[in-house]
Length: 108
Image (spheres, rainbow, N blue to C red):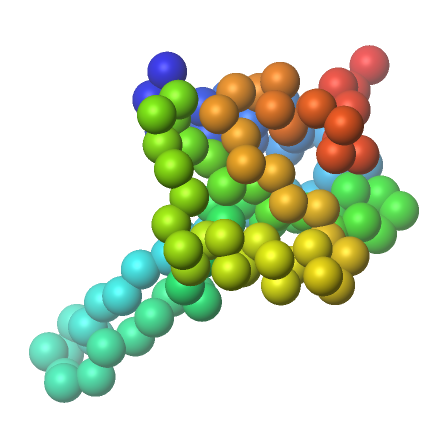
């Protein structure tokens, strides 16, 4: 399954839940439309694809990867900083990875 399809599957599985607030983060750099010289970074390097909050107030980040995908160094650094502060970090190569012992369970 492609990364884009997996991300959509995760967003659908979690996004309709009353106990989850979830949003997509696009990380990248771009120049303003006016062609100015500055470069804008949309989010810090390594920020996961999905960020959210699971009731009651547990923050989580999900980095979505295709089966052969690997975390970059910036993503590993972000994960370490996030977990040091109590956040849940999930490296997901399947929907099952989201539910694998990280505090997020399938909604029944």
